[in-house]
Amino acid sequence: MLPSACALCGEVQEDAVCAGCAGELLAPVPRCACCARPAARGTSRCNHCRLEPPAFDAAVVLGDYASPQDGLVLALKFGGALPLADWLATELARRWQAARPPASTARPALLAPVPLSAQRLAVRGFNQSWEIARPLARLLGARASPTLLARLRDTPAQASLDLSARQANLQGAFGLAPGSDITGLHVGLVDDVMTSGATLGEAARILKAHGAARVTLFVALRTP
Image (tube, rainbow, N blue to C red; front, side):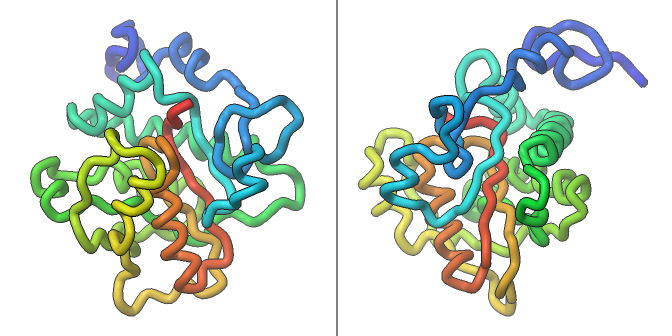
């Protein structure tokens, strides 16, 4: 195997991320099992998810979207460092296997990425969420569909909006591909970053509205 430079610290070694940086990123943090917000140890669900349950049922994340680990997503999304998608998928599969208690819900039957608009896809040339979803599905033994969800309209950037504005911004943004039947399925929804959860929540709502029995989020990094 040819040596490569760690995507975070630049150390020359054999993997996309060196052992030291991986250890810092993947250090266990108590999180809400539903939305993956940091939570008190021993708490299965945060107050927000108990009071206002989201459309998704669970979330698996690797770490916080904060420096320096945000460099992984930035290098993948804007630098075209596609090998990082395989590394993220491998670690998400490991995190899923480690987090599942005995006799828990079966693994997802189908994985789908959060879709990009046609305009953004044309500019970027690839959907980073699909690049993660494809190897992740193989590792979990699930089917994968790059077009299960469609972006029906290009929405303004979410970063400058508060939660209510984000939710309004996403109304009617997603749809299910014609002819898709997900009735009774456990669907895994894959994305690179989760911020407020509005985008993933709306996508999960569409999946549930079309019969999905359960939606689990697989997200590389989550804004703390």
